[in-house]
Length: 287
Image (spheres, rainbow, N blue to C red):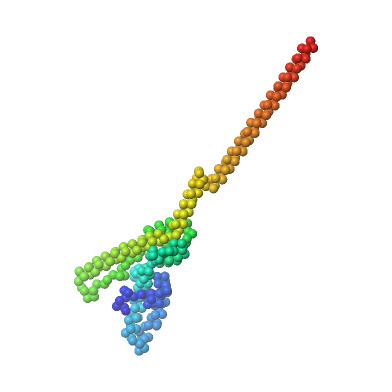
Protein backbone atom coordinates (compact mmCIF):
# COMPACT_ATOMS: atom_id res chain seq x y z
CA UNK A 1 0.00 0.00 0.00
CA UNK A 2 1.62 3.27 -1.10
CA UNK A 3 -0.04 5.12 1.79
CA UNK A 4 2.20 3.11 4.13
CA UNK A 5 5.36 3.09 2.02
CA UNK A 6 7.57 3.32 5.14
CA UNK A 7 6.91 -0.40 5.67
CA UNK A 8 7.31 -1.26 2.00
CA UNK A 9 10.14 -3.62 1.04
CA UNK A 10 11.43 -1.77 -2.02
CA UNK A 11 13.75 -4.57 -3.10
CA UNK A 12 10.92 -7.07 -2.97
CA UNK A 13 8.64 -4.80 -5.00
CA UNK A 14 11.24 -4.63 -7.79
CA UNK A 15 12.07 -8.34 -7.58
CA UNK A 16 15.54 -7.74 -6.13
CA UNK A 17 15.15 -9.61 -2.83
CA UNK A 18 18.08 -11.88 -3.75
CA UNK A 19 20.43 -8.89 -4.12
CA UNK A 20 19.12 -6.18 -1.81
CA UNK A 21 21.92 -3.71 -0.83
CA UNK A 22 24.25 -5.45 -3.28
CA UNK A 23 22.06 -4.50 -6.26
CA UNK A 24 23.79 -2.13 -8.68
CA UNK A 25 22.18 0.99 -10.17
CA UNK A 26 21.95 -0.77 -13.52
CA UNK A 27 20.21 -3.80 -12.00
CA UNK A 28 17.70 -1.50 -10.29
CA UNK A 29 16.93 0.29 -13.56
CA UNK A 30 16.46 -2.98 -15.44
CA UNK A 31 14.21 -4.41 -12.71
CA UNK A 32 12.13 -1.23 -12.68
CA UNK A 33 11.75 -1.27 -16.45
CA UNK A 34 10.48 -4.86 -16.37
CA UNK A 35 7.96 -4.07 -13.64
CA UNK A 36 6.69 -0.98 -15.48
CA UNK A 37 6.21 -2.93 -18.70
CA UNK A 38 4.27 -5.58 -16.84
CA UNK A 39 2.22 -3.51 -14.40
CA UNK A 40 1.65 -0.12 -16.02
CA UNK A 41 -2.04 0.83 -15.54
CA UNK A 42 -2.43 1.53 -19.26
CA UNK A 43 -1.58 -2.11 -20.00
CA UNK A 44 -4.00 -3.37 -17.38
CA UNK A 45 -6.96 -1.26 -18.45
CA UNK A 46 -10.08 -3.40 -18.71
CA UNK A 47 -8.28 -6.57 -17.62
CA UNK A 48 -8.41 -6.41 -13.83
CA UNK A 49 -9.13 -4.10 -10.94
CA UNK A 50 -7.60 -0.82 -12.10
CA UNK A 51 -7.54 0.56 -8.54
CA UNK A 52 -5.21 -2.20 -7.32
CA UNK A 53 -3.09 -1.86 -10.44
CA UNK A 54 -2.69 1.86 -9.87
CA UNK A 55 -1.75 1.23 -6.24
CA UNK A 56 0.90 -1.37 -7.11
CA UNK A 57 2.31 0.84 -9.85
CA UNK A 58 2.72 3.61 -7.27
CA UNK A 59 4.60 1.10 -5.08
CA UNK A 60 6.91 0.37 -8.01
CA UNK A 61 7.56 4.06 -8.57
CA UNK A 62 8.15 4.65 -4.86
CA UNK A 63 10.66 1.79 -4.74
CA UNK A 64 12.47 3.15 -7.78
CA UNK A 65 12.56 6.68 -6.35
CA UNK A 66 14.10 5.48 -3.08
CA UNK A 67 16.60 3.01 -4.52
CA UNK A 68 17.94 5.41 -7.16
CA UNK A 69 18.50 8.19 -4.63
CA UNK A 70 21.80 7.50 -2.82
CA UNK A 71 20.83 9.14 0.48
CA UNK A 72 17.31 7.68 0.59
CA UNK A 73 18.60 4.26 -0.35
CA UNK A 74 21.21 4.35 2.42
CA UNK A 75 18.50 5.34 4.90
CA UNK A 76 16.32 2.45 3.73
CA UNK A 77 19.25 0.00 3.79
CA UNK A 78 19.80 1.01 7.42
CA UNK A 79 16.39 -0.38 8.36
CA UNK A 80 15.85 -2.95 5.60
CA UNK A 81 13.01 -5.14 7.02
CA UNK A 82 14.69 -8.32 5.77
CA UNK A 83 17.84 -7.65 7.79
CA UNK A 84 15.93 -6.31 10.78
CA UNK A 85 14.27 -9.74 11.00
CA UNK A 86 17.68 -11.42 10.85
CA UNK A 87 18.96 -9.16 13.63
CA UNK A 88 16.11 -10.39 15.81
CA UNK A 89 17.27 -13.95 15.11
CA UNK A 90 20.97 -13.41 15.92
CA UNK A 91 22.48 -16.38 17.85
CA UNK A 92 22.62 -16.11 21.64
CA UNK A 93 24.81 -17.81 24.25
CA UNK A 94 22.17 -20.51 24.78
CA UNK A 95 22.55 -21.61 21.15
CA UNK A 96 26.12 -22.69 21.91
CA UNK A 97 25.48 -24.74 25.04
CA UNK A 98 27.12 -28.16 24.77
CA UNK A 99 28.97 -27.16 21.62
CA UNK A 100 32.22 -25.90 23.11
CA UNK A 101 34.28 -28.29 20.99
CA UNK A 102 32.27 -27.79 17.80
CA UNK A 103 34.47 -25.16 16.19
CA UNK A 104 32.69 -25.39 12.84
CA UNK A 105 29.35 -24.52 14.44
CA UNK A 106 30.78 -21.33 15.92
CA UNK A 107 32.12 -20.05 12.61
CA UNK A 108 29.03 -21.10 10.62
CA UNK A 109 26.73 -19.40 13.14
CA UNK A 110 28.66 -16.17 13.73
CA UNK A 111 30.46 -15.69 10.41
CA UNK A 112 27.36 -14.60 8.42
CA UNK A 113 26.36 -12.20 11.20
CA UNK A 114 29.56 -10.18 10.82
CA UNK A 115 29.30 -10.33 7.02
CA UNK A 116 25.91 -8.59 7.31
CA UNK A 117 27.08 -6.04 9.86
CA UNK A 118 30.12 -5.19 7.73
CA UNK A 119 27.95 -3.30 5.22
CA UNK A 120 27.57 -0.46 7.73
CA UNK A 121 31.30 0.16 8.15
CA UNK A 122 32.79 3.50 7.15
CA UNK A 123 36.22 1.87 7.05
CA UNK A 124 37.32 -0.74 4.55
CA UNK A 125 38.41 -3.44 4.20
CA UNK A 126 36.39 -4.98 7.00
CA UNK A 127 37.96 -8.05 8.67
CA UNK A 128 35.66 -11.07 8.75
CA UNK A 129 35.46 -13.64 11.55
CA UNK A 130 38.02 -15.87 9.87
CA UNK A 131 38.93 -19.46 10.75
CA UNK A 132 40.02 -21.56 13.72
CA UNK A 133 43.68 -21.63 12.69
CA UNK A 134 44.10 -17.83 12.55
CA UNK A 135 47.15 -16.36 14.28
CA UNK A 136 46.94 -14.39 17.51
CA UNK A 137 47.72 -11.19 15.56
CA UNK A 138 44.83 -11.82 13.14
CA UNK A 139 42.36 -12.53 15.93
CA UNK A 140 43.43 -9.44 17.89
CA UNK A 141 43.11 -7.27 14.75
CA UNK A 142 39.57 -8.58 14.20
CA UNK A 143 38.38 -7.67 17.70
CA UNK A 144 40.22 -4.36 17.69
CA UNK A 145 38.36 -3.38 14.50
CA UNK A 146 34.93 -4.46 15.71
CA UNK A 147 35.28 -2.96 19.18
CA UNK A 148 36.03 0.34 17.45
CA UNK A 149 33.46 -0.09 14.67
CA UNK A 150 32.62 3.18 12.89
CA UNK A 151 29.09 2.82 11.52
CA UNK A 152 27.25 4.98 8.98
CA UNK A 153 23.90 3.43 9.90
CA UNK A 154 21.15 5.96 10.58
CA UNK A 155 17.45 5.87 11.35
CA UNK A 156 15.91 8.85 9.53
CA UNK A 157 13.82 6.48 7.42
CA UNK A 158 11.67 5.73 10.47
CA UNK A 159 10.90 9.42 11.14
CA UNK A 160 7.26 10.25 11.73
CA UNK A 161 5.73 12.75 9.34
CA UNK A 162 3.92 15.88 10.46
CA UNK A 163 0.16 15.33 10.47
CA UNK A 164 -1.30 16.20 7.10
CA UNK A 165 -3.21 19.42 7.08
CA UNK A 166 -1.41 20.75 10.12
CA UNK A 167 -0.08 24.27 9.63
CA UNK A 168 1.07 24.59 13.22
CA UNK A 169 4.74 25.43 13.56
CA UNK A 170 4.60 24.03 17.07
CA UNK A 171 3.43 20.67 15.72
CA UNK A 172 6.23 20.67 13.17
CA UNK A 173 8.89 21.58 15.74
CA UNK A 174 7.58 18.97 18.16
CA UNK A 175 7.63 16.26 15.51
CA UNK A 176 11.14 17.19 14.38
CA UNK A 177 12.36 17.19 17.99
CA UNK A 178 10.70 13.83 18.60
CA UNK A 179 12.24 12.37 15.45
CA UNK A 180 15.69 13.61 16.40
CA UNK A 181 15.34 12.07 19.84
CA UNK A 182 14.17 8.76 18.39
CA UNK A 183 17.06 8.66 15.91
CA UNK A 184 19.56 9.18 18.73
CA UNK A 185 17.88 6.51 20.85
CA UNK A 186 17.91 3.96 18.04
CA UNK A 187 21.53 4.78 17.19
CA UNK A 188 22.55 4.27 20.81
CA UNK A 189 20.65 0.99 21.00
CA UNK A 190 22.30 -0.19 17.80
CA UNK A 191 25.75 0.64 19.16
CA UNK A 192 24.97 -1.35 22.32
CA UNK A 193 23.58 -4.21 20.23
CA UNK A 194 26.75 -4.45 18.15
CA UNK A 195 28.97 -4.20 21.23
CA UNK A 196 27.03 -7.02 22.87
CA UNK A 197 27.42 -9.08 19.71
CA UNK A 198 31.20 -8.64 19.75
CA UNK A 199 31.31 -9.42 23.49
CA UNK A 200 29.34 -12.62 22.90
CA UNK A 201 31.60 -13.64 20.03
CA UNK A 202 34.76 -13.01 22.02
CA UNK A 203 33.44 -15.08 24.91
CA UNK A 204 32.62 -18.01 22.63
CA UNK A 205 35.58 -17.80 20.24
CA UNK A 206 37.44 -21.16 20.37
CA UNK A 207 40.57 -19.44 19.06
CA UNK A 208 40.96 -17.54 22.33
CA UNK A 209 41.14 -20.81 24.27
CA UNK A 210 43.55 -22.26 21.72
CA UNK A 211 45.85 -19.23 21.85
CA UNK A 212 45.87 -19.23 25.67
CA UNK A 213 46.75 -22.94 25.66
CA UNK A 214 49.58 -22.37 23.19
CA UNK A 215 50.96 -19.55 25.32
CA UNK A 216 50.72 -21.71 28.45
CA UNK A 217 52.63 -24.53 26.76
CA UNK A 218 55.28 -22.08 25.60
CA UNK A 219 55.72 -20.81 29.17
CA UNK A 220 56.00 -24.33 30.53
CA UNK A 221 58.55 -25.27 27.88
CA UNK A 222 60.54 -22.20 28.85
CA UNK A 223 60.55 -23.25 32.50
CA UNK A 224 61.81 -26.72 31.60
CA UNK A 225 64.79 -25.16 29.90
CA UNK A 226 66.28 -23.81 33.13
CA UNK A 227 67.84 -20.80 31.51
CA UNK A 228 64.76 -20.29 29.48
CA UNK A 229 66.64 -21.22 26.32
CA UNK A 230 64.91 -21.73 23.02
CA UNK A 231 65.93 -24.74 20.86
CA UNK A 232 68.17 -22.43 18.82
CA UNK A 233 69.77 -21.05 21.96
CA UNK A 234 70.32 -24.55 23.33
CA UNK A 235 72.03 -25.61 20.11
CA UNK A 236 74.29 -22.56 20.18
CA UNK A 237 75.12 -23.23 23.81
CA UNK A 238 76.01 -26.87 23.08
CA UNK A 239 78.27 -25.82 20.22
CA UNK A 240 79.94 -23.24 22.46
CA UNK A 241 80.57 -25.85 25.16
CA UNK A 242 81.95 -28.28 22.59
CA UNK A 243 84.33 -25.63 21.26
CA UNK A 244 85.40 -24.75 24.80
CA UNK A 245 86.11 -28.43 25.57
CA UNK A 246 88.12 -28.82 22.38
CA UNK A 247 90.18 -25.75 23.21
CA UNK A 248 90.77 -27.02 26.76
CA UNK A 249 91.89 -30.42 25.45
CA UNK A 250 94.22 -28.75 23.00
CA UNK A 251 95.69 -26.57 25.76
CA UNK A 252 96.30 -29.58 27.98
CA UNK A 253 97.90 -31.45 25.10
CA UNK A 254 100.27 -28.53 24.51
CA UNK A 255 101.14 -28.38 28.21
CA UNK A 256 101.79 -32.12 28.30
CA UNK A 257 103.93 -31.86 25.17
CA UNK A 258 106.03 -29.11 26.77
CA UNK A 259 106.27 -31.13 30.00
CA UNK A 260 107.43 -34.20 28.11
CA UNK A 261 110.05 -32.16 26.26
CA UNK A 262 111.29 -30.67 29.55
CA UNK A 263 111.42 -34.11 31.15
CA UNK A 264 113.35 -35.53 28.21
CA UNK A 265 115.78 -32.62 28.38
CA UNK A 266 116.26 -33.08 32.13
CA UNK A 267 116.80 -36.81 31.68
CA UNK A 268 119.45 -36.19 29.01
CA UNK A 269 121.20 -33.66 31.24
CA UNK A 270 121.21 -36.12 34.15
CA UNK A 271 122.62 -38.89 31.97
CA UNK A 272 125.33 -36.58 30.66
CA UNK A 273 126.25 -35.54 34.21
CA UNK A 274 126.47 -39.17 35.31
CA UNK A 275 128.67 -39.98 32.36
CA UNK A 276 131.04 -37.13 33.25
CA UNK A 277 131.14 -38.32 36.86
CA UNK A 278 132.15 -41.82 35.83
CA UNK A 279 134.92 -40.49 33.60
CA UNK A 280 136.28 -38.40 36.43
CA UNK A 281 136.25 -41.37 38.77
CA UNK A 282 138.14 -43.60 36.34
CA UNK A 283 140.75 -40.90 35.77
CA UNK A 284 141.29 -40.59 39.52
CA UNK A 285 141.71 -44.32 39.97
CA UNK A 286 144.28 -44.53 37.13
CA UNK A 287 146.50 -41.94 38.72
